[in-house]
Image (cartoon, rainbow, N blue to C red; front, side, top):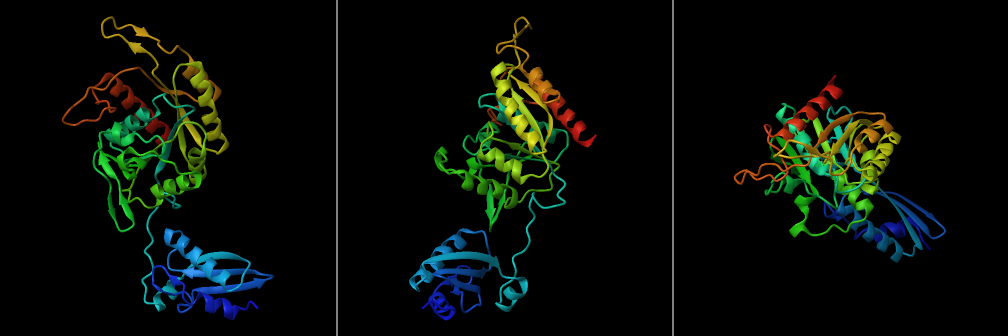
Length: 349
């Protein structure tokens, strides 16, 4: 017959992963309920929400089933500071997170309806332009499947990791974090939605950001899991929608805008990328992808066009290689500087 004593006896050999002591010995088993073969157990450990907790969960379930349970329900909680002190363990220090209440950082999500419209190019140049205007800026490459920010910014180093804290790479005065830093040899990412959401959450909570005025989020195109996770995580965010002049690109981009509106995020405006090609020989503008997409999208979303960026290539500096960053004096760089100033004016008034 299943009894609490029998369950406790079965759990004596299960060790708390961080203290390496029996969960029974350290009074980690807080509650046992037995009802018709279902055993519900509440367990306290020194640190929740970890891979070690997942491993412990399996060990507990196996032990309780071997004791005779048909099924097992588990709940975990964290030891209180007083309990940890009695165990001779220092309570984990509170770490700052960008998701904490009272954080003054303004989040700016850059998104698009489809890929190939230059969303990441807009993100990195907006970030560097804001930094050139004296702002403290970070960027999260949240396009987890199609990460490209490190390559675009010419970053070759990896973030430093101390303990459980990750220190972002600094480039052009911008603090940068990307999934690309944690992938070996450009391997494809095959995680499903929940794991992606957890990694994204880690970028907010486990990265040692300096105090930031603005955090740019380069979102994946469309309205999939990652974009939805960002909208859910951030109670307040500004959004910039990137499109090309082509009617289809603008039509699809409207979905991303509607998603922002439905989640109470403020749309700062529309960036029409690849708006035209300006001939260096004649100075004439050629509208390679048509005209009007940006205007129609801005009208539909009841916002404004922040910038119309032409087709063009940054001047490559072999000594300070960054294939997608425009210099301040470059004509397109000047457009990004004007756009960044417009963003500051809209947010800071």
